[in-house]
Length: 237
Image (cartoon, rainbow, N blue to C red; front, side, top):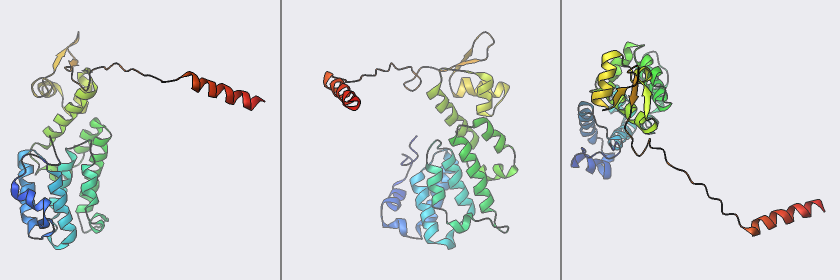
């Protein structure tokens, strides 16, 4: 899925992003509505969302905390990528500074922790962190199927690196147990579970996980050896 320029992007949003409208404060409403559509329909337009954050920079009176967190949560689902960092870079420093009267700094700190874990492939820790505080549920509630999006992305990355994985390990990575994990593995991912104990997950071969023969060729000729030998001889004289 292309999270930079998705096919779902309507023409009016393209006109905002690619024209002078990207600097028009009145475009904020359209971009916010489009973000809402992304959240409800499980796709991400990072280019549009960064344009919205840039308009917030230029028009601080229009800033909405929940919109900023929704943009960051959408960026989370695109791991591993620089999307979260790029979006965070567009949030005004004044909004990031700790403030006992503001909730946004704490929310962003929480999301940054989740992003670090996903970027570092610490999937089991990610699910444990997500379940550790009700604030995470509040931050992700507007993003339809947030956990499913994360699991599908994890499964995709696993399929790029493995041909087989033990089911208990996958359960930790997917944040699922028992029948729920088995259903995701077989129905959603389309993988097979077999082995003597019925706990080995077989992942179909694909261009990413297929072993490739590597050939290393070194073009060394006689002249190269001659120079090395001559230099060694000169140093000893």
